[in-house]
Image (spheres, helix red, strand yellow):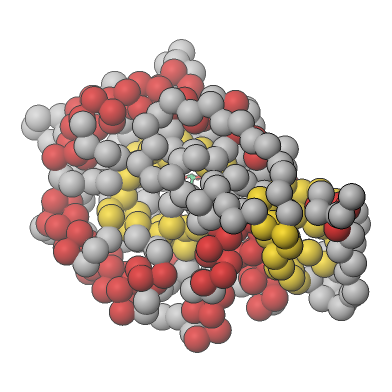
Length: 356
Ligand code: GLA
């Protein structure tokens, strides 16, 4: 059946290069939760405060999930009299600073969302032409992370140009704000992502039409995994390929088996993906927690060598992935792609760990 086995092997090797210019906020891939998959744009203050509490109570925060990110839908339809984006007052009656304080008081960081065009992907006001004002506003409200999309009209400007504008505006605030960029047009963001951001999406959404997707299967994440293959040398040391969020315990039409959900978690860890949860953490089974708080897998993702793993073997039936760890050992994922159980053999030569 489709599942992974993750193992450690002793050896050294695998070089990596990463040209980084954006001042990375953390060395290892960010871990946290995002509102888009569980709630789409139906977010409000009450729900987000409950999520913050749940992240503490469930043990997620202490397992490393420190970021709580509000995705699209938090903002009012217009800007205020001073041209600032502000939170929808019906759904966020106390405003964003209040929420940031609430989240910070629980030992968490707060993230927010905008787009480089005039509108966000869900049709809310984007940051086009307001980059400096928005960056300053986020900093003043205590925001720690910005996910920046590429939707909306942007006249003749390229996404790279506009993302760079926001990157500079964030750096100019003096507040360390993690910066995630989305771009779907080129598939080549990894070539320059580290120059302007902490992390960049390597592909589209794992679940695209959230309300119209009749079933979510392992294929959703497997497709996105393919889009990081070959990009590992562009990431590391505070800058990350982002194949999109985890869909472990995905709350809508989730047709993945338990083993397939474990497989996503293991593979996201081996490629050093940001571990960003896409479930409703207010209501998690023990089985879900066992995946998401597996200490050894998290340690592979967060390893201090900060070298993303690489796929060393792939055929119709299986894949082998290997990641160099700081202590000289290698983490290995054996991924059985078939529906049925299979015996997978790891040849130490394939992971560069054979004795001479
Ligand atoms: C895009 C992004 C998603 C989400 C939505 C919000 O589709 O890729 O992750 O942020 O926009 O509208």
